[in-house]
Image 1 (cartoon, rainbow, N blue to C red):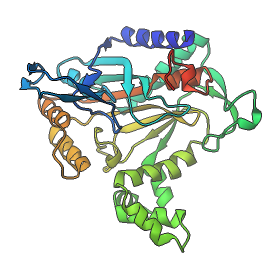
Image 2: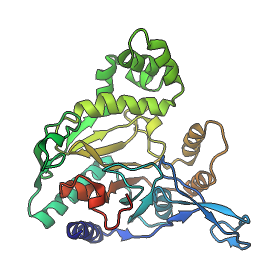
Image 3: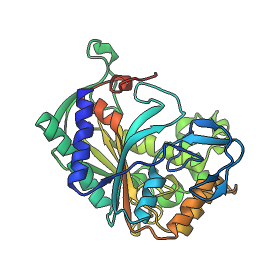
Length: 357
């Protein structure tokens, strides 16, 4: 707990010294947005007053949600003229638990106007390096997977060696998804294949099912969304194959289908100006240049909804974008996961004060 407190303090110090304003956004709201996750639903008593945010009459009884991410609120603050904002706070996702996931957890999100992916990567490297130097007087630390008292319990992450030293002092390794997809598919048609559900199904079925079970596997895959199939290909054939070191690795350029809030690259169409940072084989940071075209944003939301009416929060967010979101970079990191990593802790409940699970 002492190291956790110091890490959060160092983050706030770093952000304050660089002119960022810390803000608070709603935890309880009548809708969700900013991430693809299952929310906790809260039943609220009736209220005959008006919703002060939008001037609409409330229903007699209304469902509210615990937030799954503060993203849409923070971006609206950038629209309102606050160019550098961040928030450290709780988010809630109703998706089960394991040794690295808790339904309630702490994240940091940052938004900065007039920045790009390159600056966001530099920000990530410098922030993590600063935390290490100020707390541990070094940029290196040693990790040990599994229970150190039981050597047979050790796990390998993506085939990574069991023990090793991690160094935040060096530039992070970079992996470009579009380059890896060309290797995975073995053709320059990778952009067409990654956006074609039928071809993805054939690709996955050929590698995961025997000839006798091929037809049933194809039918099973047809029931899945394109986004889920793309997720599977990237995780199984890129992330698990190229992240072969404990060292910090930046995975850059996710397909548009996986990044509904991210700006499309002008150089590599079909892919976004987005990256994730993996350390010790686990995701730590997700960041991207924000999509600021309200009409393209609405189109992507509609694709997600599969023809159904847009959620109220999504519709109002698109309306806010019409006021003008400058070129903006968004960045998010799990605080609990960072603390686990820097303290070589195996269970998330060991880095939170009062874990329920």
